[in-house]
Length: 353
Image (tube, rainbow, N blue to C red; front, side):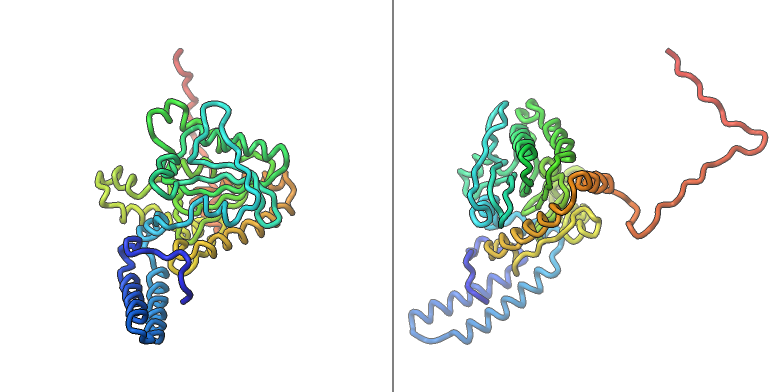
């Protein structure tokens, strides 16, 4: 196993990775002894590396929904800034909503991905404490959504495709946000994005929580990273509502069907982008490369479709969300009942004024 460029410390291992952490501690100790005593432990280290790889494959091939949520929230998981640095060339940020302010939880700007010039709209959580406070921990305010749609309309004017990167626990629920029209801002985005006359690709790179994610999540293609999640509510919030007990979050996560496999099976996402062994936080560069490949290929395909057909397909895609009838089964025809002989249907009584 090659040396991890994004090495994680003991405190960054998740609860279900204890065996993986133990292998790392043993290898670090052997490396220390090798440098101190001058003894070659390369064979032992190689054997431990193989065992660690096998353990990672075993664990990550059968993650529960709650474990997937934990991976999506890992402190070392690549954030929007990592994608901008490693994937986007000549990024030029666009600021402000021309109304209230510049929400740092949503960043917008023009750049180039592969050979494609695009508008990037993404949610940023921040890496350290100072940046997290500035970004409001990735929870956008109404001005963030208004900024996003304003820049999307700018992209439509100049026929520039749009790429959105979703990573938020949810829209900010504070009093100030509600006073400035949080719900309306998200609703306007849903309506406007559904009819923008440019290709739109939406990708969930971490957390996809509630309307906060949906506010920049309407497009022609919806993709999700393998160990990200996308849900109408956070597991903790769902548990608090249903059981009035946040400790029931693991059960809520299972019920919400929020993993990439479940979402793909329910036709809520079009593609699942694979992550490196052990999650995106173990190899940021490969993760970003996989996302870049998906964007370039998908944009190439979308550009072959006329704008009118693109909008028709987008409308049909949105209307099919939540359908209880599988695509391979035809809908049952509803038979209209006829009154029995001698009976007539009662006429409707006009409402009193």
